[in-house]
Length: 508
Image 1 (cartoon, rainbow, N blue to C red):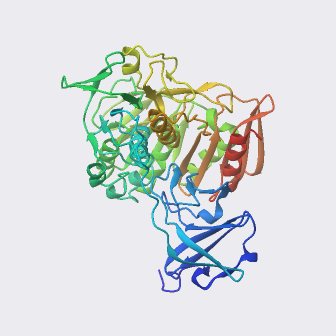
Image 2: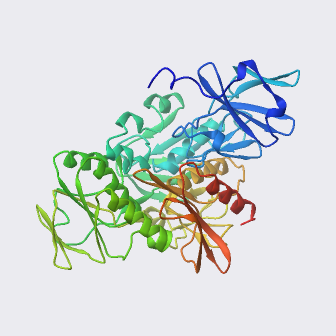
Image 3: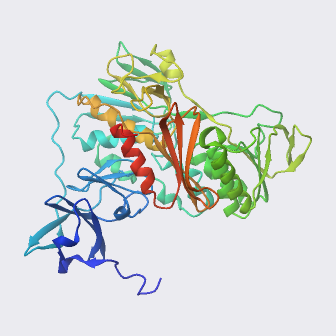
């Protein structure tokens, strides 16, 4: 990068800007020294915070102001304009907050404000909280408990061998080789020590006793709790055909899985991906980035049609085909040998590596064994509390009453898991917060990002704005005239943010 390209962009805020240049409800990006700063105006109040999202460095100035917060246009993270706090995932870390001076009709920004003080613990908080599951929900809950000032014992039990990490990246940049392993952890190792979080990795919980208020580990140890969060996530569905247990056949759920696939991919030339799911197609894109020949086998007529509809399904397929992926749709794998895959149609595909992406199932065993109410997921109320008082559930296993659709739904999205984990944390501290966030996910296919807000299992109408073929569109999924979900393909997606907000307020 040249010196010219590396220069801070926008106005030099230390020199000031006329108040009239900042519209009410508007945002302007400038800089203080070498740091990008966002200036936002709400009536007579002027705020200044870091201009770059702490998640993936999205440009906040192109996002959406909602009250005294700003939402990132890339992955819908939300930050407080007053403190810089990350108030909604996927961002966890805050952005800097800056002091604002108003003098002679000008707005001047020169120095950072001090970080907000840590909240004081309440007198009636629980003594010990146990979290079962070290994924997005479990980590977000632990982080929020300490952020909210919880001073009691906090135990995070994870079956994973790695400390909480950015799971969505396992099928995206990490698998493609463009993200290094040290980028993946949600927090550095010392964080858990500093925050007095008793993180126990590779730990299997075998039973929960709601009446005795304790969990049992595979080691035989019993751990008592005052509040419990169940966040056991989901497990990949395994393929049941001859040869599915061969060493070059893999699923992708964890970072361990991703590393195992990379180890084989480094020596492979030909890959067969079984399943045209989001995971399957993200794997296909990532392995194409490694210059492997990739074939995708799936029983449906077009990829992702059940989620995104015909038009976007066709767009996703054509995007992959432009990058060299070969599809074998309306077909199935019947057998796997050391060097090839046999299809129901009679075709034989060469394969040094096979990746199975045919869906996941929620891990409900512990909940069922504990006698919690289960129906296509662990049933929770609007506060994410299960049928057993003091026991909460979040993430892939939780089925909650969705205010927008009016139905009980269960959603397997990373951002949903994180946001539920944070809400459960607050409610374990007695705050009585309703979980009303609109579901959101994004999926990356080469340079095309698909954003999706809401939830639509079924719809009877799609309304399309823009040009699907050129990857610049918004698609609304409706049932009985009501918009249930909105999918869009744009780099910085203000339309998706506006749809999310409209669903929150009931305007959509």
